[in-house]
Length: 86
Image: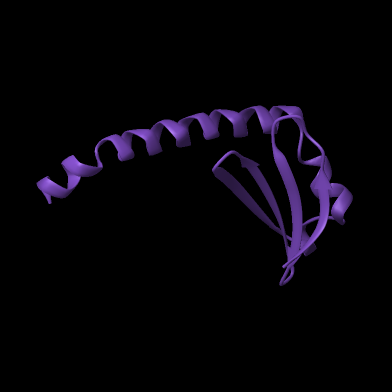
């Protein structure tokens, strides 16, 4: 997998990869990441992929990151309880 582009952003680390006929958009925030794959034949190239990364899309990604963190914190808090209930 090779990095074909990096999109500068004040909050997220955004990278676009190419591998095995697919583009992968990886968005990172702290210890969490989201990945989105799209076939290279489903877009007209890298410019199309970059055009999909809008402010609205990134706003929704932020909401998912917040949910991911809350879910992880809850699991971490309950880790010992889950072991004794198994």
